[in-house]
Image (cartoon, rainbow, N blue to C red):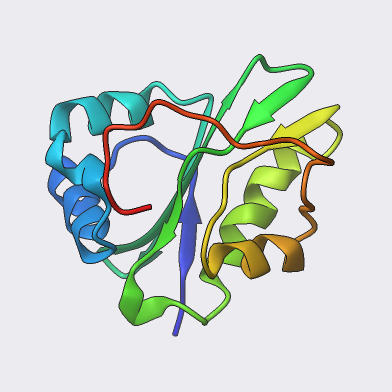
Length: 135
């Protein structure tokens, strides 16, 4: 299987919605906000199998010191094939030297992020105001 990564932001909204719905992410219920959020990200990496969007990750950053990775998702049919690692590696090309790289992980995502180099942030406590219900 040949997967192509892209950093271009010309992704059709329907392809994004299909990916988010396949993963049952509640942000798919707010398509315009989701699309604008992704398009206005500091970085956006997408993974393609032919014409199908099979993965996506984004970064929000000040461009110098801090980066936050809000979304990383791979279509369920393509999970476990290294696509998430490819997306993280592509993001790391840009942000590896940053003082602070942050994300929020739960469930099976925790082991994935540990495998690609992230660790629990000391004694910090995750906090949020969240409009979804899948966590």
